Length: 363
Image (cartoon, rainbow, N blue to C red; front, side, top):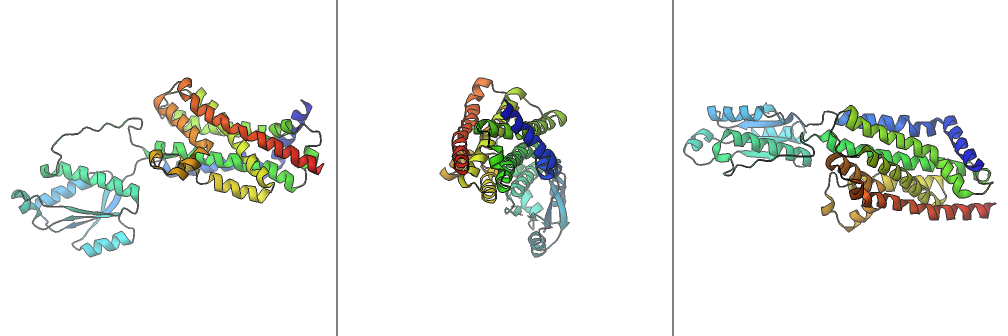
């Protein structure tokens, strides 16, 4: 117990004396969260600029333009008689699309010739392209019966009824940033110790496993509190509905923190080098968001992507957080995700072995 207390209090003093270590568990993650929240706080995409080319200039074309302008998603930046001028604005990224109303639009409509309205959308920006396409189809369908679907379809969104990108993106982006800081802080704690040649003094009393756990514990507590903080901010302060249990989610969060600490130490003992272990950590954690299945469906991932996803504890935690927030599943239903998170703790076995072997060789 004295060895545990010595290592635990010693690490707290190290954090207190190191502005960098203290920042890693307080200022830096909170500032990163603030930046992400500020960027996506609006939540709903509005007033995407387009250019309109009206070659008909009739009362019907003006009515159509009015319907397009009424969409909160679209903002008509400019009306020009020239398609070439319109495309110049698109190439300059001053507009995301061009809508072209053809000549004789009104006349052909009266003659039931079904005139075609052309929309040129810059799909280099996939999300913007989809939003503009959806908004334009809705506006055109309201304007003309010929553009309406023959069968009425009612689409009712659920789990994100307001189709808000804040809830969709931020609830996954914050944990993705959080896991990076957990790994970095763990490597800084142990890597700096080896870099400054303090490992012999730290491990001189033996009981390597107890000393390692005690050294990790201040960071475990800190990042668990940071995680609880962002969770409560999203679902309590901002008021987004949370269907399930905060207890189950926080328990999964605890398993995730320790899982990443074990993984970080495994990366370190693979090289026992501070700088190289940080490089490995960056490679491991930085692309995590892309493999979570939030912005790209898991079922469409190839074998390599699925394998990489399985190696990330955060992927199981995000599944847990989403299922608790949206579906309110029971502890039994979540047991497989919790078990997967706990399985990453197995990494402590080779970590303890490698630390013991390294220190026995040195001592």
